[in-house]
Length: 197
Image (cartoon, rainbow, N blue to C red; front, side, top):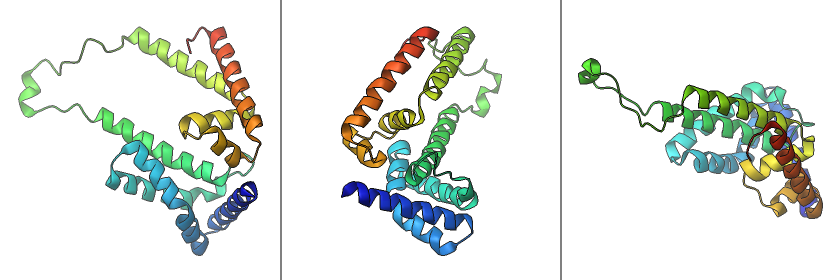
């Protein structure tokens, strides 16, 4: 019964996205009404500031209005696609905020520059970390689509096994085996590349 309701809800969101792609303002308003509470919660969980979460949510919906035609139902559920947009905007904001934390006063012009902790990575370490990140990305992308989606939802969205099963419309045992096999494949791939998991 819950699977049928979830399937109908996703089908409804897919229809609203399709109509939004055709510049249907009523469909867009309904899409916002149905999804904004969830997406606001995602933004707030990442940025931890209400005004910033509201601003990011607004920017995300502007992006949805302009890019709804790029949504591909074969690749992800509508709410997953919308959540990814919000999450990516939040992470961009967090990265920008981290970069903006170093400030200089006018009196610092004659100084030798800001002092940084000696624990910063060396250029060699940064190169290795970049190579590791590319290796991890390649390993994740080598997973079958459903397994990759299940792992992403579990680790990036924090969904439990039961929530994953409901979201993916699959039995709980199937979802658990996807996760187990996917993590085993990831570990084997990372081991082959010499990246510690």
